[in-house]
Structure formats: C-alpha cells, structure tokens
Image 1 (cartoon, rainbow, N blue to C red):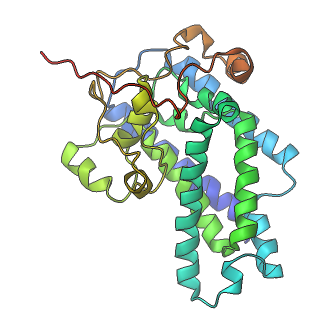
Image 2 (cartoon, one colour):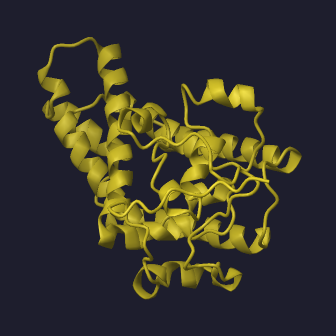
Amino acid sequence: MKNEILIRLLSFASVFVLIALWELAKPRRDLTTSKAKRWFGNLGIVGLNSLSAQLLMPIMPVAMALIVQENHWGLLNTLNIPYPVAVAASVILLDLVVYIQHVMFHAIPILWRFHMMHHADLDYDLTTGLRFHPIEILISFGIKLAVVVVLGPPVMAVILFEILLNATATFNHGNIYIFEKVDRILRLFVVTPDMHRVHHSVTIRETNSNFGFNMPWWDRLFGTYRAQPAAGHKGMTIGLSQFRDPKRLTLPWMLALPFIGTPGRYSINGWGREPVVRKG
C-alpha cells in the first residue's frame, strides 16, 4: 500500500507527542532516575533497532502480506469469508500471537535474557515501551512473518495491527494519570498504563502477569491477569532486583546486558511468591 510507512510514522509520532505532553502535565509517578539519561538510551535503541531491521530482515510484515495475498497463501485466503471479518479476525489473532510470544519470552531462559533489557528500566514511561534489545526485535519480526504466511491476513489488517500495536504500547507504558473509575472502564477494551505497569514490578509474581500489549482479554482468559500491584502504583518498585545501578542505563550496557547480566529468578516457570501487602 502506498504511503504505508509514512502513515505508520505519523501515527506513532502523534501518539508519542500526546503521551509525552500528558506525562508532563499529569504524571502518575515521580521518576527516580535521570530522564535525560534514560531517554538517550531508550530512544537510541529505537534507532539501532530500525537500522538492524532494515539491514538484516529481507522483508517487512506488510510486504510479506502483499506477497501472501498475491499468491493466495495462508488459512484466510482459503476461506470464503467477508473482507471486514477477515480484517477483524486477523487483527485479533495477530494480537493473540503477540501475547503468546510475550509469555514465551518470559518462559524460555534464552529468550528471557534478551527480553529482560525491556524490564531493566528503573522507571516507567512511554520510552520504556520502545526499549527492546535488537535481537528480540529480529526474533519478533521472524515470528510475525511466519504468522503472516500461515494466517494469510489482508494487507490492511497487518497495517492496522502495526499501527494499533505501536500506539497502544506507547499509551500503556505512559507515566500518565487516569482516574481510577475511567481506568476500570478502559481496561475492558484496551491495556491501560495502570494495568501494564504491574508487569514491570520488581516483584516476580507481578512481573509474570499482565502480558497483553493491546487487547486486555488474553490475560483474563489465560489466568495471567492481576488488577493492581500489592504496594500500589506509587509504592511499587519498577525494574528487576538484580539491576538497580542507574549508571547502567547507558546504551552500551543495555546492549551487553543479555550476555553479561544475570537472569535472576524471573522465569515464569517459578512464578515467585505472592507479594506481601503491608498494612498500617
């Protein structure tokens, strides 16, 4: 589709600016580390990831969807279903794959080593949603390409999904305040910041919950939903227990973390103890 990249970039930029301004106007939590240092590292990894994908990936998901459509590959191309239904089903199924993939990055030790860079951020704001190791990005691209070939989604569905995923990942990583009553309604339809922030808790049991990025239903369906952190959103600690040094928020250390850092005891197979709620 013509101008697909431009549309995606404009959509991402619009959401990014909106959430950034929201964070300035009404933050949910006070930051504990240097925002400038964190943003330099987190945004630097975005540029590196984009370059890596362009150089190392032979084809992008939207281009693959075009090839699949032209050759009538994939499940949906063999079924005689209305186009709107195919688009909606594709977006939902692609989102389910992202949920399963996220769970696998917590369950498989070698994958967790790359994913833990995302969790090692000591604060939680919209740039945390962009902080992924280049190797994790390449693995994710490979999974997405395979799913597109098997599923055979309409090209429009892949574009819509990419836009939605980028927008919601930026939104639900935002350090933004939303009224509790509004949040309770919103999280019936989309993953909210208060819902996903639980996933970034230093407490192992909470880290292994709320895996959704876009649609909030998978966590409830598969039993990984946790409504609130035990210590509350202002009292909870963000990050991983084994990485607490603010000096290690630099881009070189972030890239080296999977190879020199300890994975800790965060494997989903262990789950961890239930967090203790301190009263009084």
